[in-house]
Length: 345
Length: 101
Image 1 (cartoon, each protein chain N blue to C red):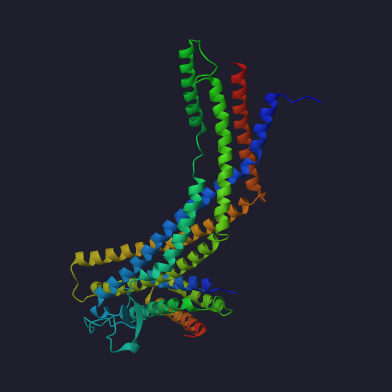
Image 2 (image 1 turned 180 degrees about the horizontal axis):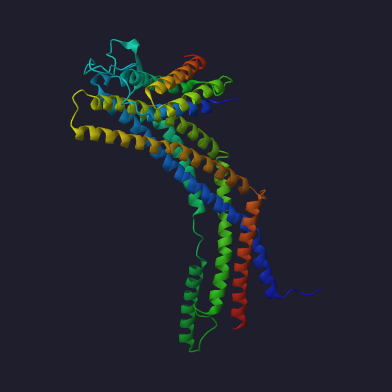
């Protein structure tokens, strides 16, 4: 039986060490994706809620500007089913019903809704914390072994210098920091440290997920429901505000004695700006829902491949094969540099 | 079976169609009826938060809402606006019955 030459053995060990590491790299990539999507979803959700609140404020402005009778102390407005329009319409209570006629109007809430955001904000906070924790592990840089090696070598060289000075001998066995052998050894150790670091990251990600098994998806699902509910609220407020704005615009435009052109122009411009803003705001909720769907899938994939010996789909298998190939190339480069450096020594 | 999500989507579309229509140059009676429709659709939209997750009756309401939305979007005269409002009235009346409110 032939004995495997030492140099070949080093190559084989280095290559073998890379084979199982590509899946870890994929796991860290997926974790990074979850973190990125999660942070984006949390930020977009907060932005969306601010639009919901803005729509409520805009409704209040339109109602109270149109008719002072719309300003009730209990935070609601009882709007007439059929507003009083035309020449005989009064200046007050043409849109809203006086308080004593409670049965003849439709109640429209003008109450600020920030208090009722609490539950939604709690979900966003949970999602944000989860994405942050995953991201903290996934984005952590591998330790730099080159610094430790160079520090140790500098200490040893200083010691060697002192010995040479005291003994009066020439030189010593230690190479300089820029010696090709030191660089080759450092390169290989750096590479192996990175692989070890990814294995550590995966262990910590598993521990994080074990603390909250399946916790991300219920949060995402609940948040998606909240977003749908708030979108209906925003939609209602925007519609009532826009129609009230149009009623007021009608009274400005259709007067028997026309108002100054600049007044009518400004009112019409404000109306068309409102139409454009409404249509832009309509795009937020579908985009956010889409983002939450993407995050949900990313988290599901992340948890699926986080287990030992996961079942990879075709795309993932191709990615693992590519990462393995890249690792082998890097390993070969490092080992070749090592052998070349020591052959020349 | 149609879900509350499908119903909500259809009602939101009707509300948006009502919102996006230019009513300020229409006769007063249409503006009044239009306002009433927006308010009533909004009121029923708020009621959906307490509705069943799914119902075999939702599909019929969704169909009526979609017909009304298409009519509102294509209304380009006083007479077609009145016809569109009648379609919306049918949809909201049926929705009210299904929700039991």
